[in-house]
Length: 297
Image (cartoon, rainbow, N blue to C red; front, side, top):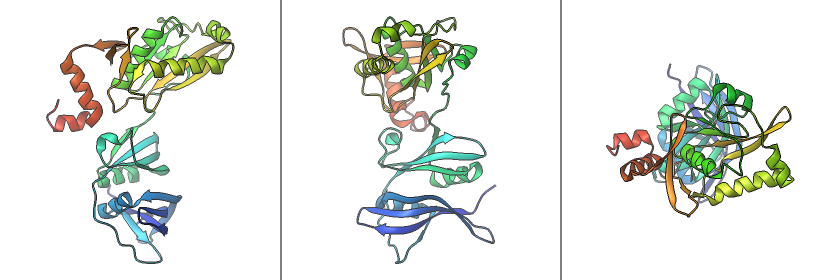
């Protein structure tokens, strides 16, 4: 079902480069209904004007507003939760491949009914993604699911360092994934309690793990993996959630040499074929669908 709806910007202030406004959703029925989505939004003028030119935004202002010349823009809907209502951030960038890593502007925490959300995605030609798709925070749930293309277990940090980096790189180059430290390959929760005792402080332990991942991956992972400590009974487990990126991520081996890894089923595999590495790079930069449309894959 198509909906006759628009965003409505009640402009508060306009400068040469920026527009500040209250963002409403306007559902056009016999009796027009408006709903305040976000007060006090600030957006660069060329993105604000892009929404105007796209026909999804109306303006309400004390004085007439004159949009500037249309400039190219890409819009991404970064979904945070999905159901009858969708919670999302609207991301703006000059180029599509920069949306998830180097967006220039955001309107955060917008909530709309799912069908209305889909209408805006369609009308804007926006790219949408579920940022936290596949995130698993409960180690018990992870052990019930077992290792797969989005879950991997390692016994510890100190003796599994190389495997940790290979897995993080593989998830970053393939799909969102969860790496748990303190769980055996068989799915038994053994904990990292001894390592925590060696560091003397959980924060120092997490900091050391964070620093090691930073030092052994290039370019810097953005966004950086979410690392948290979970307790199952009297055992501590580390949960690391890695988001797939738009950059080709490399690991650094013990000699400082770069390598590329991807996720294949429930394994992280190092890729040596230059043509396959090139395909991964193109996918990360342009996205799989755009790459196929351009005949690059």
